[in-house]
Amino acid sequence: MIRVENLKKTYYLGVVEVPALRGITFEVKRGDFLGLMGPSGSGKSTLLHLLGLIDDPTSGTIHIGGVDMLNLDDDERTDYRLNKMGYIFQEYALVPELTVIENVALTAMARGISDAESRRASMDILSTIGLSARLNHLPRELSGGEQQRVAIARSMVNRPLILFADEPCANLDTDNSKIVLDQFHTINEELGQTIVMVSHEEWHKEYFHRIVYLKDGRIDREEQHS
Ligand SMILES: Nc1ncnc2c1ncn2[C@@H]1O[C@H](COP(=O)(O)OP(=O)(O)OP(=O)(O)O)[C@@H](O)[C@H]1O
Ligand SMILES: [Mg+2]
Image 1: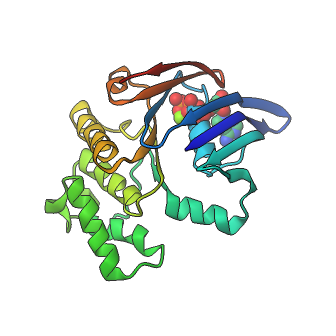
Image 2: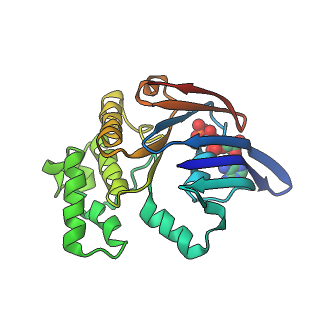
Image 3: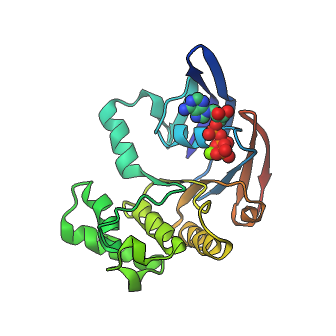
C-alpha cells in the first residue's frame, strides 16, 4: 500500500547540511502494524513526516495505493492529509475546552460532515476504544492514557487509510502505555487498520508485525514477526 523508493531528506541549517535520511526503500502492506525503531536522531520522525505528507523529501518517491504522492496538487494533498491519513503524536493536543466527544467530532466535521453524523461516528469509535463512559468529560478530567486514546479516536474517526503514530506512549507510564498499545492492536486486528508507529521501547516490539530499524538515516535491518 505504501511504497517508498530511495527517499532522502537533507535539512539545511544556514550553510550546514544535515542528512536526516540517506536513501530509504521499503514497503508497507495493507493491514500491517509496522514499528519504526532506532536510536535518537536516526531519522524516524523525519520518515514518518514524509510518509504522512507533512513534509517534503529532498529526493525519492512515495506511492500510496499506486498514487504518486509527490505529484499531487495542493488540493489533492490536503484531501489526503485530512481524509485519508490519521496522526497521533507524543502530545495529545486535545482542545481543553471541548469534551471528549466534541474533540473527536471536530475532526469529522472538518470534512464537512453534519453535526449529527459526526457525533454518531465519534460515538462509534469512542466505544470501540472503550471510552463510552467518558464522552462528556473534559481532557483534564481524564488520565494520560485516556487522553491518548481520545487522540487515537480522533485520528480514526475519518477511517484513514493509514494511521501514523510518533512515540504515542512517550508521555505515559507503563500501565497506560499498555492500554494504548492494546487499542492499536484492536483497531489493527478488528478494523484492519494499517499503522506505522515510531517507538524506542524494546517491550513495544511484541505488538508490531514488522519492525524497520533505522540507523544514521538508513535502514539498518528489518524484523518480521508473525
Ligand atoms: N527541522 C530540522 N532542521 C534541521 N535538522 C533536523 C530537523 N529535524 C530533524 N533534524 C535532524 O535530522 C536528524 C533526524 O531527526 P529525527 O527527528 O528524524 O530523529 P528521530 O529518529 O525521530 O529521533 P528521536 O528518537 O530523538 O525522536 C537528526 O540529526 C536531527 O537533528
Ligand atoms: Mg523522533
